[in-house]
Length: 466
Image 1 (cartoon, one colour):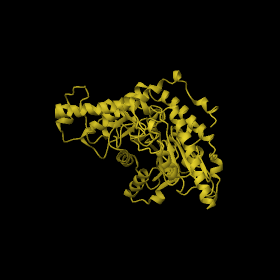
Image 2: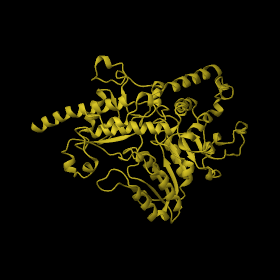
Image 3: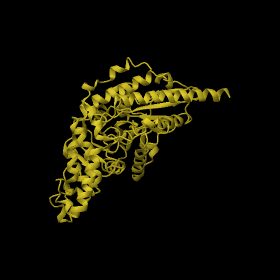
Image 4: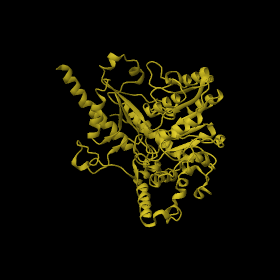
């Protein structure tokens, strides 16, 4: 494979100071991932883990912090809420992560709450900010938003006696294209803004990996009098954001993807300070002023800002698992240097993929009729070519389409120790994460993909001849 041009994305070891953070993570081995087609000598080597867009690798620091809290639980019991040997009293455990989360999303600390889970937080925010009227009642989102979001939107509009088919506008890419154009998003807001109560897109689209133009969409939505929120599940820890300065009204996210907090990790939300006085309709005691929280008053006194939306005390184990990862983000210098390294890693991956013998240009792939797409062999990348419109993830669609080829590729990659994730029927997502992936990971993934497709092509041709 020709690597000359692709090498322009790589960094020499001396120019790659963030590479050292890989040693702060536990990367699964080929053996533990049950890779059956690697040599005996490689079984105990780390696999090629490019799945941080789905579940981030485990920080060693997180394991240490969780063990410390288990020890505190075992030795101090309930007193850990107030008298903690590591100065992380459980009463204020969320405050250990709020400052770093605020830095990562471009917010004031008062605008951040570490709490709940993604969809629970989404329901809380939509219920708070979606106030439909006869004239303004619609929700604008993307077609093929993450299913949980679609379920939430539909259930929220039905709560108000509205029909989701009328009240929810799902914006789709143009015919023959895979991603949304900014001008199309802004045009819909401009033309239908007076009827739209809530604009709520993904920051980074889970399926295509497109990073939506958050600042411009927010500005356009606000100009039309719409509330603007964002689902940042695939954006937080992946791309730099300035939620406060952009005037975003609210945002929600999970932390187990790029933030590496572990499976089912605790969620988070953002509420802009200009809504600081907005009362929550679902008050809970953890949102009450901590100065009098344990006095158990009968009247709710909300913490000003996002933390007033807290309901129950957060899981200490889940919070410190997140803290272990966030401390690495902080040590790495935050999103600016990580974004720079991410651009190089993802650019290197894209360039190597384009050099593959099985590459199909996106404009060609998008123009294929269904019959042609069921006959052609190879893959394309449906994530935007422009680095400013994507994060770490590249989504590959495999041909023939229809769920025939992708599962074979996915299985063969896994057998060889390359771990991505799939989205039916035809997409495999690969995400080189800046905190722990290497350029060698990227090269290994493409080399294995080329090997797999070569074998499958021979198999496909043989089946055709038969």
